Image (cartoon, rainbow, N blue to C red; front, side, top):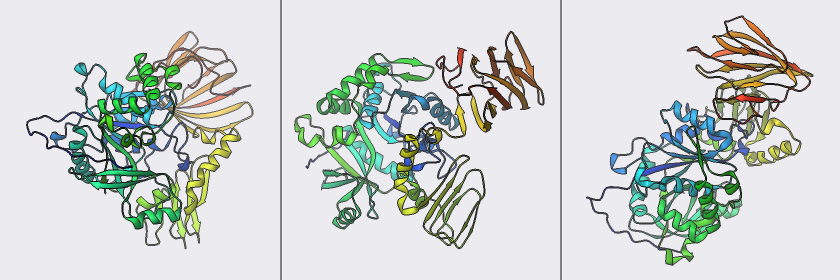
Length: 508
């Protein structure tokens, strides 16, 4: 398939359309297990620097010239289970009150971008985004090391998008990679991009080598720039079923704190599809839409960090080509990745190996086979193991807890509550709890009494007592909780009041 685009130069007096970052924050990152889990997937991890991948994505466009019209308020589309994690990580890097649209369930990138376009277009005369903005869709789990190069490409693509094109960014391939999709570019266009001849799925090694030798294939980055109205027109023509479901979901959306909750029943009925399949591959057959599809080559140190070998590729390495994160002691090792979160890793005589250590699981893999980690995750899920769902350390909107020990009828947790935060007012049917304050000051509700506890002080909460834990201080509150009872599951919670709008039963 082939399409072309011929851009007219824009008038210098015409102000640019607002440029709104759309951060696509779905995905479970199963190939990055055991560090990536369903409740804490890779986009929330700091894998290649001090910031998490979500934070890096949100900061990626900072520094664009004013002429780009960059909006200070991104739209973030994420899973409802990750809402507090996304909001807190963004706030930590100065991105306050973004429009966070919560997917009741994952439906791939086409519905996610449709939700974002509807959100950006709604009440445009009152919107901080302005009328009909340009949407720059960026997956939250990618790395871009050369920001100036990305900025230059975005500025270049804006001219085409302003005129109604849908632009994707193709990464200039430097090796025959089997873990990426490919875009075959066609004829050169006036704005520096190319028409699109075809899309290709992840190839085998021989096909990937043939693509590189051909010289006209780019890696498919998953980055897109398109005007909101253009995307909505395209999805209406190409996949009206997706648009209809998303429109119904957003028409009945409700605001919950800083979150936008599309109607769950309407969205669950939405088909799952990617931007490429739903729209980009269909545009050349829909000439009446007059929406050119084009690809702009990009060289910006991009990686989707799809597996552990990709992380090894972007990390600094020693003289023996080993990349280490955390405490690792090596002898006679080469071309390997060692990542430790809690304990010392000692490696002797290992080559082309990946070792990933967490508090509750260790992965050891051939570096060339890390794409197959997803099969381990599938096996664990089939066995009903919690190792795929959550870490031993679990993050909550009020702080976190770490289940440090447990056995028949007892469990010990280390709980940290952020300053000014509180757990829900709750009760348990099957367990009693004993709290010991080891740092900070706790405000405790225990039955009819509310009182303060200081360091080295404790309280016992009998089974069935209504209770609550809060941190009224300025420093993190840390307690040790000892649970005892016939059932210690996290779903043994009856909630009476909750600051964070969570349901009556479930997580604390």
